[in-house]
Length: 51
Image 1: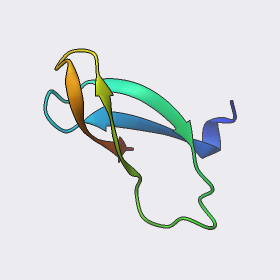
Image 2 (image 1 turned 120 degrees about the vertical axis):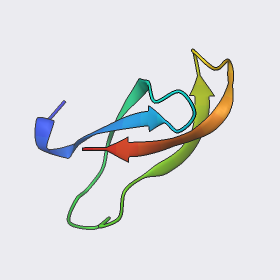
Image 3 (image 1 turned 180 degrees about the vertical axis):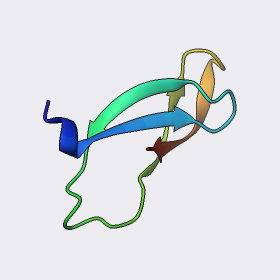
Image 4 (image 1 turned 135 degrees about the vertical axis):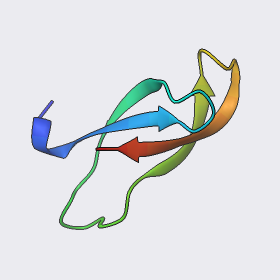
């Protein structure tokens, strides 16, 4: 995985980093927001991209 295109996805409820994803920074300017399953919360929650 290339480090410059790597995005960490953090749970909005418990603030744990559960997923890593790629994104094209030239095409997508805003941060990613995806609804995914959190292992700590054990539910589907919104995950936002962190720095």
